[in-house]
Length: 396
Image 1: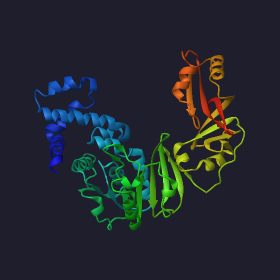
Image 2: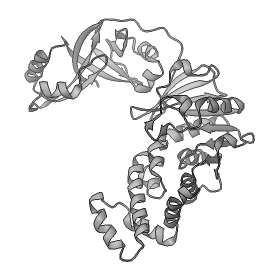
Image 3: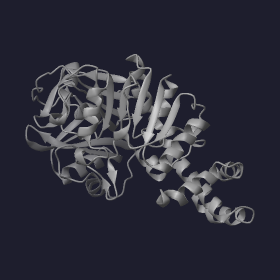
């Protein structure tokens, strides 16, 4: 506890009237102006308090991307909390799923600064939020207070492995996946280990475990539902649900949500390049649901090992981005450069799948001095095993 005392004292000072007034004073401070602002404020306030307020202002600015400016400018953060907390849109989706399952109370284990607890409480769910880090607990408690959710969120400092969750309708576990050396890839090195989280989930009426999206499918317990979630096209996480639909695999795309359920379809057939190329969302690819998208589009694969779908018709789908293909070339930098010059292309987007070529390196070679008025997208990929360049543009 003594190791945490200076940080806790600095944090507690921010909750005082003087600290809150300073936070208001430094809100939105440009990093380039910090020194001048700090020098001015230290004439009237303790130096440690000014430093703490400016540090919190920086964290709030970083957190706005995850929590939205309206919440972030009122909330309290730690550096790890900003890095590891769930994006509000994803947390709200998960909370809504809990609510739809009839869950009225959740034990949020490894709650961090309270991002998921906040979303659950806003969905009308009573929450026990538990973390073992004193500073993190202080931030979570302060966040429940400033957001007006104190009546629904109980924050407790404890080892999650020692907490009795039997009185709750559901358990949510978000194990720490970062250590002193960065991201942890071995699930048994999570804190707490994934095996403990799975055992805890099995003992609860319902449960959700937040895990890294790279988890192998064979590591998913047979009685769990596996959901991969993306937000704005970026894969954010995977969730193992217990007490829902065992064995189901789904991809959820936010905003929306747009959900694609797995049906155990066989791999799509490889077919010739059609007029349109579809790039499935990352959550669809992680969930191994490219076949479901290909069936929607009446399409096939360019190559048996690559998740690009080709089709002759343009069909709307939220699960993939569509491109109209205008040219197909064997991989050849000189030919691509000549074609782009002929088409007066000045802005080039390079995408790759199944190619070792670096997009930025190729862009420099083929557009050394971008001047054209047109845009294009080039896909570096394989078609039936052969290195190929497909040139086109977003469809529709």
